[in-house]
Image (cartoon, rainbow, N blue to C red; front, side, top):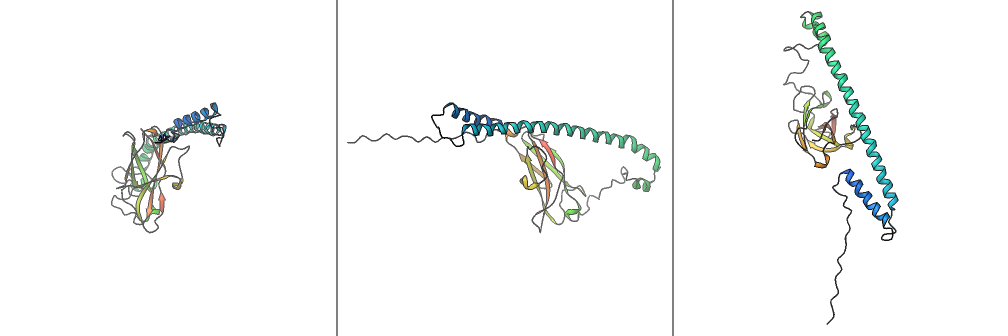
Length: 242
């Protein structure tokens, strides 16, 4: 009786690159490259060569360093912008407001001519029940991003013309677009991830633990009933993942 042949189990190699943070990804790439370089006789004809792989990994590391520098500059510029806004707020409220109030002497017409609002009487906004016309008459402003919950954002949108949750008569919905990270705030929604519609003006999304501390950018868009395309978008807003 013939002796049965011993079955040889096939080895299936995997890189172990999926699901890693970007730093762990580069570390793993370099580990594979270094191992191939240290043992050239095992797999002598790798294409591309270990040197090419290492060069590409080093290029990514350099870009990460450059991005970090850009983010530092971006945060510094944001702080300067906020400081300038704070200064303007104080100058208008603490300097101009009392001077203008004295100048108009209680005359509502004069106050409106100078573009001032009147507490409890006139705020310059449309009434709460005002109908918004076409989407071109307003935009879906992102009024707040709540990032207080771990690995979660809540995005709140309101119509810029009346401050309400509804959409203009020619719009079907408010669609939310998102970009996680990046060297600069996005401007083109085609390069962002479409997250879906906001319900009653609000949208909630969750993140992976690997994304902690990353900045997330959002743009809200009115989506047309007939055109089935984006009508008008909000200014970009951002928040960090906690």
